[in-house]
Image (cartoon, rainbow, N blue to C red; front, top):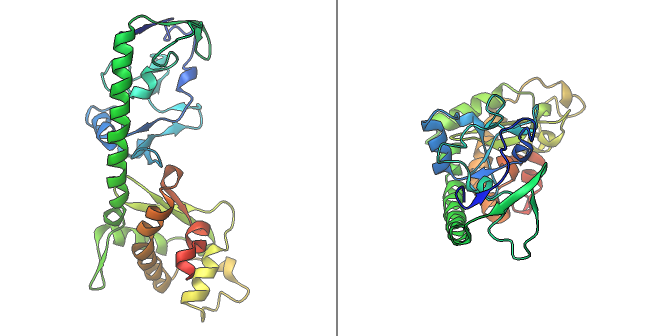
Length: 264
């Protein structure tokens, strides 16, 4: 598409300052790994996606994709050969049958100058999307590996990490879990959450904090931490398979604990 279209010089700050970079872009793991390999990104620059395997980290402070470079006034991977395909088709798409003037968010003057190349790119993008979706399904199945297993009561590396994190958070502050590159992490609650109280009542009803002092409980106890890990190992993949991955790989407790399978 790069050679099939032409338009204004996007990197000219008098024309634009990365307006089209203010969107969230999904990429496959193979592309994310290439960004890391070439030094453009780190694992923390990717969040799980419900479309492809990952989504590029969005910088909330700048309102732009993390690949936007202020010095370049454009995408840091623009000339790398591995820019996300979705970005190349903007703003022309693959055809313009009505011969309309094509504009981006800031300026007009875009045009397709090689339609055969554009149509070839369209076919390639469809194949790319298909392969990305296949990969994403495999990544969803990998949730069990990222979570880890309890084998004969012994914590695996990932499970041990999650268990340790659970022991260091107050139950009122736990909002759920988030799927990272190679492990699960905790999702902080917005304000105070009573979701864990339901779980504690079911699995440790004798706890003295449950009656009227839940918000003063300072840490998730060892028993409940084990129960939570076991709960995720038993049900999380089934939840994903039935409901699909959540946006950004977030799995809030209110969804997990209210899911009909867990209450049957």
